[in-house]
Image 1 (cartoon, rainbow, N blue to C red):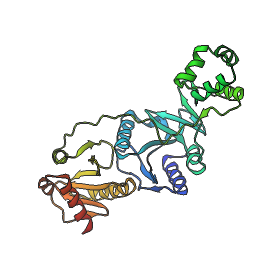
Image 2: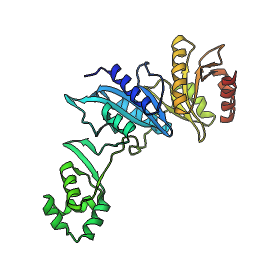
Image 3: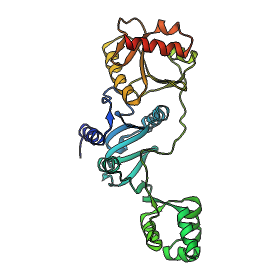
Image 4: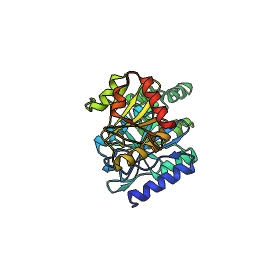
Length: 309
């Protein structure tokens, strides 16, 4: 089995081959994701684990929350679950995060071949086009009972396939395609999972509360290389809060790399004094400067001013 470091390198290599821009790796701990990648409108937050069972619920919730507020898709790339290798061409889910092997990722982004199968309790399943199946059945005058008998399932099950888009086993789906001589299996898109509204935690940090007061929505983070996502309708800011230190400089550089890929602004609010205006693309704003601002526009102007110096 590949170690995490080698797997992360291979994933970056595949993404770059497919024309993605990738951010620097997040080496700071704790971290809910390892790096970000973008190609056009597709923005991914990637977590890499040799064994996907190593993802805990807290990290998963955080990366889903980050993805929601950064208009990104969270994805976990791994090799094994328990002692089994991940199936090529299958999507797994860990706490709601789509999970694929390196080979499945490569098939998706290099070949445009989306998986047809997903793993859930009890085995591998597929999604079928229930409306199309009903249309074909009625066109050919096949009764519910007759089709149920051919498949070895109940009439109620056939009805659920047609009316409720109930998923089915690979065997049943293949048999349906054979009966109707039509493709009915629908691909699973790991890059556009169903959106789940994630609750954001309370804003307890006094400096972040200043941003609330000037009109921003503030989404605090616990396991990211920044302390919050700060946003309004037109502006998204990766926001750090720190005293001036060497570790703050490292964090600011990483935030700059992430913001470039995420197409956001990047700011560290310095609790104290700093002679620096900017670290790469990350603007440094002293707490006392923030205290003089009343409007989001003033904040945006200050950031632009620091970045242009």
